[in-house]
Image: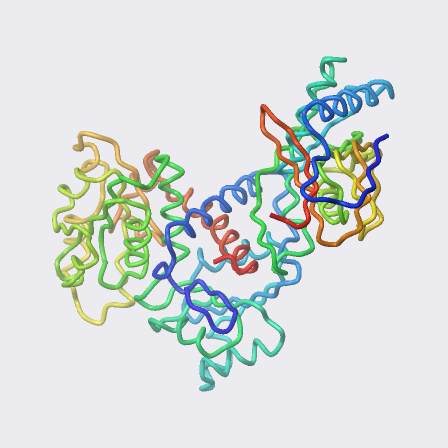
Length: 309
Length: 186
């Protein structure tokens, strides 16, 4: 969490402490109740205007943020780089400052460059929420993942969580590792050695290259998507080989001595990192993650508006 | 009705267990005497301390007529008009397990001060339907400090303190309830 003058931002999990995360969870509990009630909307942020700046494609995160903002009664403007003056060569600061001059209070930004949100927080006069910056961080995804584990298993502390797949290119993995560790979970990463950063052990995580060993150890398996769009070279021989070694199937799960919880941050490549029957099974909490995403984002925006984070 | 008007020497005990018990019994008797219809009469306590008072009033009312069954809890945090303007508020759960449509709703809070909390509570309540009538019951009415045109129909004690720094503190546990008047918020 960094400050420019009096402003607070959510730039990453790094900088949050456990108490702040618990406050976000407790606030999200209330918002989840609200979302499941007959009254889904409140006027809490009626005098706040929020700009959603998406310089990268997104379905879930964008819709989730927009719904969270609208449920809180904020005014929302949406912006995507493909239909903007960014294509004409305008810089990020100029683009954002032009939007802010129309009296916008908060900016939710997704950007392909790692650190873009930190950069913006230093140079513009608005609260920034990081909705994913390159391979760096995706804090609200990590929060909703940990919130979903807490909901399913009662607590995050003491739970064993394995993150499987493309750790090298994953902002979800980096944010998840930090968030889960802050909450007292034991974290393992699993994948081919080419997709696991060489110094990942310095974050205090276990490393495995064997999926069966990893899922036998864990309580929760978070399956990541292979991010072909971020890969400028081949990190494994073929998708088929990756899938046979690291894809989660019902057969592999059936061979375990216990039942584990399955997560996926989406979008799912069915048949690659996870088979359809596993994604749709009762052990999977993938759709609960999406549902919790709105409550977590409402909590983050609500707390930021009160300068609580 | 009880009224207080004095030069304060802080802290001053305004109400203790016995007086509060009497006030709650009086509230229940007033409601019962009015002939409230248990089918349409509902008690809604405001989070957090209004709920504790509301539970006591509801319990006493059920002693007089066990047909009363409509009870809810309402958190007005998300309807406040001061979000982002200083004091930090975290939302608490609301639970109104009945339709408010056409009901006679009694909102209960511990202290009525500026009237802004009650304004936001009415706003929140309207999201659950269109009640036939909304009334207000409070333990303490600080009527000199009102910022909105809101008046309670039922009150326990009127405190006419004018000093802007003064603060009414309600301590409420299962064993003990006390109301203090303090020089400042602490």
